[in-house]
Image (tube, rainbow, N blue to C red; front, top):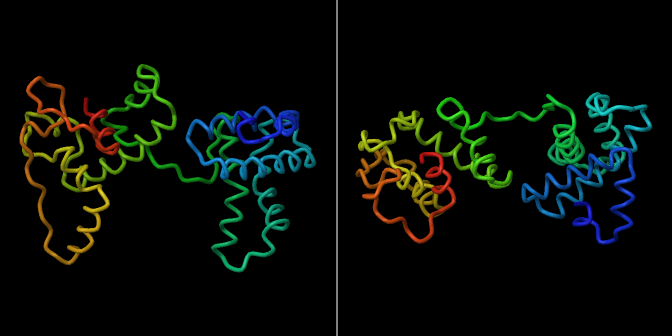
Length: 241
């Protein structure tokens, strides 16, 4: 996968020959699968190459030795690259540039490693704990697709909690007065968000009770779906089915 980020094969081969070469190659494949931008991954690879040199110069012999070197490496990085920072925000950005790719790589290498990043809980973990495992193993969805599902379903989960709904059983044909996925999806469009900001000072409007046909369930009587379903609505539909 390194060949995707380096034009010259010799450059990719030199990276693979590093002590952390195999781990860096694995990180590149992971980042590509997630759909990360090529310039971002290339910059992260440069940070990982410097981390490889730093780890070896500090006596690391096993991957389990690497987590304790993260903070010293960040400080070393700031001495080398952060001297031109003019504010707290710029310094924080430079520190993140050194820390983020290293911690992401170590999550792939060291079992149980979490790092300093606060990881938000998986949406609907209590209602459908095996949803993402099923989509990955049975449907064969890529990690990048599942990542988009997580983002969309977090918004959907917060929407349900806002209106007092949280369980899957509350979004069914047996409870037609609950919120519908289509109504929620309509609220996520850029135009709807702009309109909501203009009505910020107005009185809150309750969601319109959806009819039975708006509830997303597999049924012969369900009205035909539009030609193009927004991705944010598609994730919620897949969750409910």
